[in-house]
Image: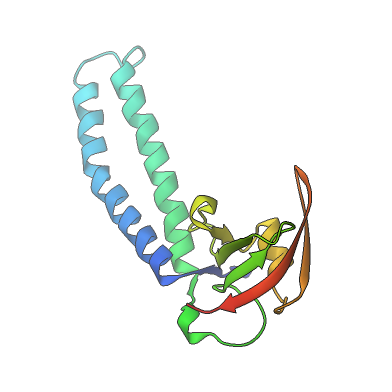
Length: 158
């Protein structure tokens, strides 16, 4: 039997997933009603409403299965309980770029990642390069636009 890989996430990401799961489960009866209503219109072979409702039902069930899988394998990490001098999952890291301009990132789970708000997935190239580093370590990351270099200025567990 295959072992199920844990899915690390912050409590906030876990809450967001459970809320999304509840919303999708609440949508199930509405989809069934839409299918029944469309079925009442007669010939199903050319019934666009029926086919759209069935397609939506398939999408919702797939999303529910995916979220249930992530929730069942969730490993909730609270950054405020972490400490140490190395960058780990949940760390908030301040880096200095090549122009000595500070950039701040928090390493989060894949479902929580939002680069525009400084939250990057632990599986992203930058996060993988940062994990295990300490203050004053240099980080080199290869991205589509070329190589980027950073200096670790600060590690926080907030």
